[in-house]
Amino acid sequence: MSDVEQKKTCCDLAGNPFIKQLDDYIDGLHINFEDPRRKDTLIQTLHYAQNLFGYLPDDIQMHIAKKYGVPHADVSGVISFYNYFTTTPKGKIQISVCLGTACYVNGADKVLQEFESVLGIKSGQVSEDGKFSIECLRCVGACGLAPVVTINQKVYGKMKAGKVREVLEDFLVENSTEEEAANA
Image 1 (cartoon, rainbow, N blue to C red):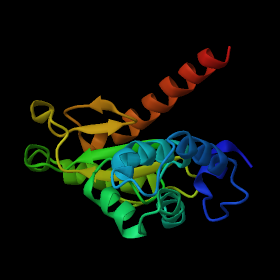
Image 2: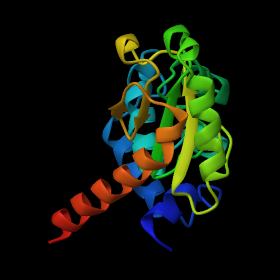
Image 3: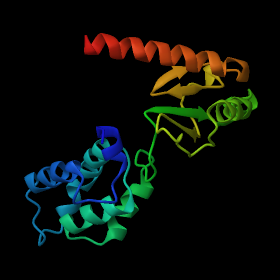
């Protein structure tokens, strides 16, 4: 099983090598169950866990809650409050379409529909092979470039539905060239 497959398979905590890494990280924080400030490091632990697993499913949340000696609701409350955290898996290539006002009035909904059509998935879903995921954002903060799409944090402005295939192909070629250079 590849690292990506193991990251995405959180249901078997005992068989997941990333659990040991997470436990070592949390143990290194020397959490005292009697200390009311023990949750001070919870956000950084959630960041660490999300980087390990790719997302924060219930079993990982419950594991962290147990390690902190707090109710699961405390952990899930932090996760639901901060937009950075996700409880659903993401693809290796994460596509975000801004649907803020400026982007929407400039055709972002059509751009989103085209990404969904080309990839065969809807917003909030991951492709069967785990390669792609699509999500909608409220605002990227680049309204002058509306409509805006990000692919793995690379910003594409003035997007049109007719450019979706071209942008995806360019991204894939550029990404594979960078991976080949890194592996050389």
